[in-house]
Length: 478
Image 1 (cartoon, rainbow, N blue to C red):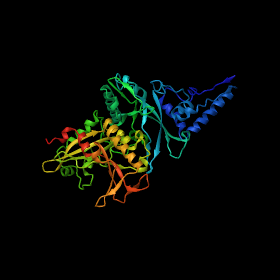
Image 2: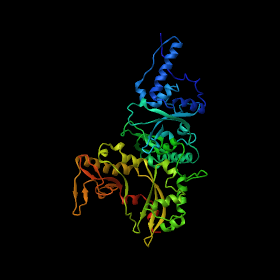
Image 3: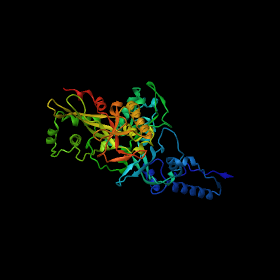
Image 4: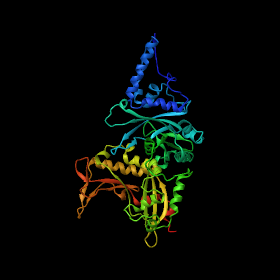
């Protein structure tokens, strides 16, 4: 007679399934082990159990599940059967297990490699729930985070090494911002706009796409337009701060929790509404005026001295100064980091660097407008993320045309002044974005797919488009 000795729930004596702290204690046994070692140790455990019971055994070796590192930890270390219930993995303790990678950056710092996907969003059910009693918070309030070190040279998932295992629960201002993010996501669904959700529209908690492929769609309750499947997830930027446990950035909210984070920010900025840049420098005791003085003043108004805010770092929020002229135009388009020609042509739109950047990033505009004497004066601030329709239509069209041109071999010529020109997408060709050089000089080049050298380029958002996205109050002369 063969006895199939499987591993579910045989470890109750190893840890208290109802005690979060004891689960965390037991999880320390994962640290410094690879997933392969965990697998092999459990195989030995099964063999010993079989020998003790004088029985034959069969080790269930489901190779398909070896790629699911979270399931491996559940089965082979905690010894419980994974479930798809809308409850935490450790139901009695109210703890959800999450296994996630991190990486070591070139400067030696640690950062989360990806966002932390928490649970799928049921568009029909979530609109009937509230934050405190709904599925999301009940399942994901207490997390057991198991971090493993990702290295590019490692070929098999099983060979990654676990480095941290700890409990995590957002509290204080973090929790308040997550509540506000949740409310924004649910509000959009209630308005029939699930198809317009974007990770960039919220601060810490995002609604990220979670389909088998980019064509998958599902219904939503208040619109006939089908939407991509989405899941609640903590942003990669937020998880980087969580990973490091201690933030090196300065918090904007330093004492009591504020209920309306964006309103709180606007209130601080608006105290100086109407001040010129010179007047702001005097008021804030700034003696020198670097090139980025307009955005630097925004940080100083918020009480930040090192141009890095904890909340903005967690939320992947980029600060940009916007200067509006007397005749309601913006002189400068908005640039982004240069791209590598050969890397760009090997990307697909769904996983493109620029497309994902726009989807995931929020912007904080510090807005100035010239008065009748041509003096720039602070008008206020605005949080902004690019609408999904603009990303998927205008930006995508420009991006795809760029890739085609680079693959086919761009046309290059010089004008009578010796300046380089090409047939890469120009500003006049697209309502939202274009390609322009972003090089130090003509000798700062990158290699094209066909081997020629050409000055480094980057994507730009048109100045006319940026102006169209600003609230009308900032363009008014009143």
